[in-house]
Image 1 (cartoon, rainbow, N blue to C red):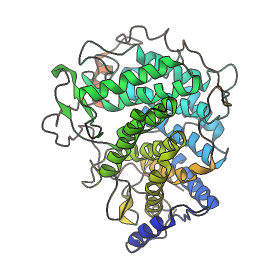
Image 2 (image 1 turned 180 degrees about the vertical axis):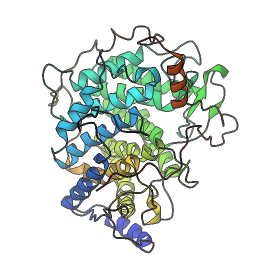
Image 3 (image 1 turned 90 degrees about the horizontal axis):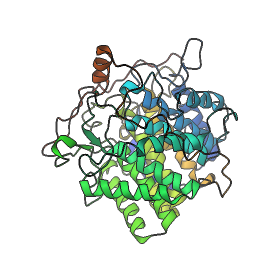
Length: 467
């Protein structure tokens, strides 16, 4: 299988000059090589997870990783099975995805709801949606099913659509006592858009598509998406969303790219094709280096080496959704694939650190390990590497094309009819903890400057697991 060898060769030549250590072995012309590299990186990532060990809590990563990133990681492991066929982690992934569903089976577990945001819930919902789309082995019949879980997340968030300010949209935080409640951020609304489009494609229910259209129009009208299809971070509804935080993140571009591609597939509309192409063109202009060419990077924090723990994982989602978009909008493939190939080759060179010699770093454009490590680095490398197997797998299924996951269109509507009401009595300690976890991000709303979150961490991340 030949995958853009001219691009990979160019990138490899540029990066190898800087390489100082033996990197992860990756030959993009060999499916076996890609699968082996993905296996190595996945193993390194899952070393951080102890929820399947005695005394551990299934579905949770140890600190400093927040709950949402665990959901994103298990979504990456669903992808891993999808691309490689390796079932080694399936039971662990299933246990994690089911343990965190909460009493109303909508990914609102009591141990998280006091500090849970719409985007946090959305990442778990999208993991379940992916499991349904790729026919990941279904849970036992007496457990909630993948499609029903995705529907529950969608339904609970649709109830939170907020017309009280800015003409609609979702708030970042679910509960009023959390800092960030007055922030309507692009990723929360993007997760909802993405999930709505994919639920529409899976079920054939027009209502989901209508919600996706409604959300995309709102994001466009409010200015969170620029006229040139760049996605900004969010806006303060106490100012009626009249000012924007202009920082840009890879995962915002990616979540809207896949949603738009799914909408094109459903409508075959020239409008959605133009939107999809424009989103991708803006993405490549902002988030890929020119030297070496076509290598993904997090423009807002990588150059200054101040990505926090969350941000270190964002490239994983752009890679994930770039690849997925080519299955529903095949005309994107020839444009997208060179970027995935070049970024995978560069990421593999970064996976040359740690005691094992294959620990992955943050900055792929260096051609060597940058002495950083963590779940985010492993997940980003995993997704971009395994995405180069996209032509070898089937596209997403639906309930009319072989999908086996059972749904429940009413899921998530019973336990969240009053989204402003917390699930249990809130104490002073809870308020303080939530405030620390979701530190408000209004710095930088003016003028379009990059903001610095109060929770920012240095690029070095936590200690790696022992090997």
